[in-house]
Image (cartoon, rainbow, N blue to C red; front, side, top):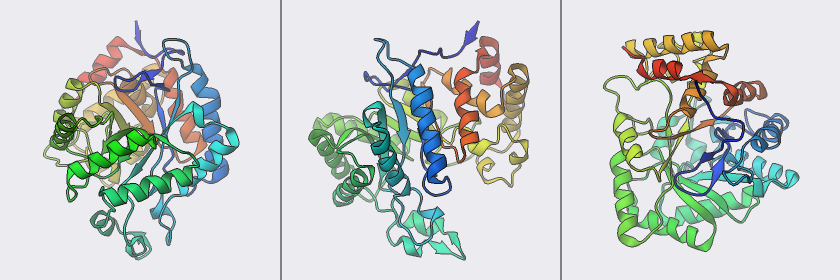
Length: 355
């Protein structure tokens, strides 16, 4: 017996009637570290070769889910503000005539005020950036969504995220503005990213009290490894957040960095000195990495593919992994996880692994 998605099984987003390819494609590096020609090659394959394999229950085609943000990628291009990814996607969608086959997601609020100052000794200064995010006030959201629509060359985005939770702006102001975007058709729905569970509860309560549409998606860092003991981190899914999501199936978990920069396939990245490992390192992570390695040997898949396949087998809550490849080869490795079959025993062993 196997637990695997089939060649015709799409993923339902939250409790909507929207169905997408079970692995979403992140475009963060497109237009900067990933040159335009290679970006288009990835996008063409995802839309033309992968998406047609998946269908909604009524047999109509699933959508190719592509994710970006207005700030992508200022830190890869000194002297610029971002917008590279959105602009590239806009050009590609126009050339490919692809807009109606895509669930297009973008984000605002993570743009950096005074971005020209967010550099130190030739490197991006993230301490400065985090202290100067544009935020989620009504004027900022209005400017941000209009600029994104212009770069993307479209009159609407299907999913619009508050990229960085803004505690300095009253939630009522942000939510009323987002509700207005839904009402006027500029966004189909909205979500939140990099946010604590208690804030999600506040958001939902305010929406219910004011008759505003509820958020449909939560985009957080989520992978196979458990966060290390004692970690306090607003961007990484915790046990409490998993419990909250399991109780609210209308809020879709979209998992960014699901393969943690590829460390499941590259043992050399698993040391404490590799930054992506820092939030997870410890005996529990060692035990879970060993389980991934065992299943990879048994299946002939790579470690990254095993982790993505394991995520696709989760149903409490359901997970929509979001890959963000830098190269076409990385993309092909990751998307091939759609064809990896895990037995029930293998999934159970992966679930149970840990110190």
